[in-house]
Image 1 (spheres, rainbow, N blue to C red):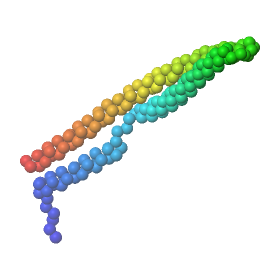
Image 2 (tube, helix red, strand yellow):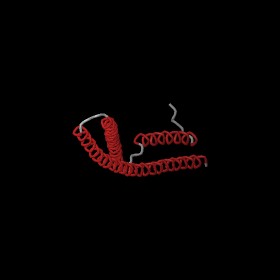
Image 3 (tube, rainbow, N blue to C red):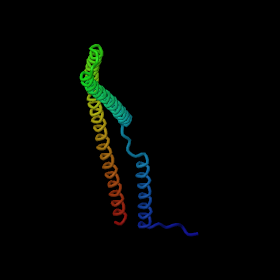
Image 4 (tube, one colour):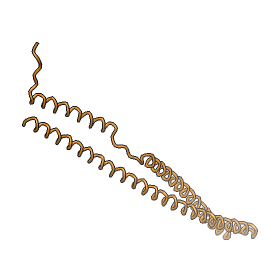
Length: 178
């Protein structure tokens, strides 16, 4: 049996291959763990808050739409009652019948005022929900920007580490050639 003889070029090649395998494993292992945002739990919380605000706003808008519809129905009912009153005045009807109709129209007017106030309050609620959603979206976007900036810094650090490793390999290769 002959003893193994290694020349410098063979050792250098093996070392470079070994370092490149280590580098690939190291980078892959770091990429598997990937970047972890320290405030991920807060970011998730803000996402849930934003979703909840969107749902609340949608509910408030549906309610506002329903209330506006009720208001329009009452206004139409009042207009129809006024038309009926005009036709009853032209016909020969009793005064008590006309007074009953007039009282009904006055009650409808009060109902319309109440419904208009209620609709106005719901419109204010919709505005509040919209403002809450906007604030929630802004908070969420701020955290997303922070996460993006930190991820970029992490990627730059990985690239810098990889460049350092490649420079080290090049200098080892150059030292072996000398």
